[in-house]
Image (cartoon, rainbow, N blue to C red; front, top):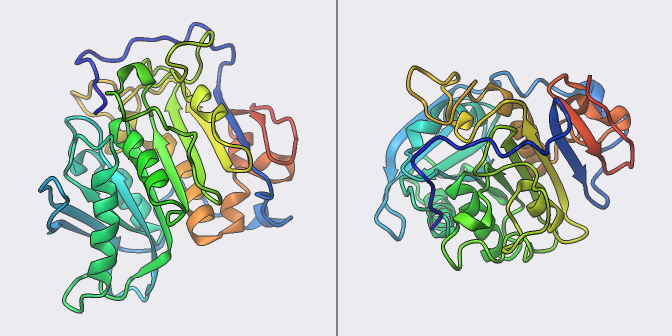
Length: 329
């Protein structure tokens, strides 16, 4: 599993030359239809669905951990929905990500999350997907008839981010995308957990890599090649095989645990500086694009003029699939 120090992550970003988020995106054939940006909703705001949260609603993953469910309320008219399996970080619980997971579900996704807080190998995320698909066929389950088995993704934070990447590879194309938030450098991995990330991504899959500029556990950049080689989000990003749709970004002044904000950091939140709000729009737009085929959502990453995210004052883009050079404000 991934191992982290107890202290708050130290700042390893002296080499970072830009005052705003570094973000890059590319992928063959990934550009949404022209004109989509005009219809793009604001994914940073709550979505149109009322959300139902079911604690310990399913049992269990292969380690004996129960599953929590976040899903649009059954009476809101939504039928078959994309599925997202989420992996939590070391020593964390699903409740640490409650604001984030409610937000995603409000945009029309079923989210299943295991209580496994040692999820780097990806097995509990695979178990979560399997449980949800079996529950979809069970008339007595709250998931009965609600899962679109062709639209499944994985996401996770820290150790759970490694789990998401490993699950993406293990399912050999059955998953569409992975979102890895604060994916730690390889020096913090147990042997076997990180060596394949992200070199074995199946054809047709995509990845979004997010971190914070203050994150010393998952720093955006590294000074030079290292051994093992992947000690930054940029290094992981560069190693994604050719032809995969990919994007990376670092949220300005965010630390390793800002993703756990509710939405702010609260009075005692080590590794959290501002909270989760800055992540909500980019992450949800990516899922809407990759799992629902929402071209307007995709325009946040790829569009003439570089998309809304690239024009936002918190972001500056290094590249895009269209080859445009994008500059933050």
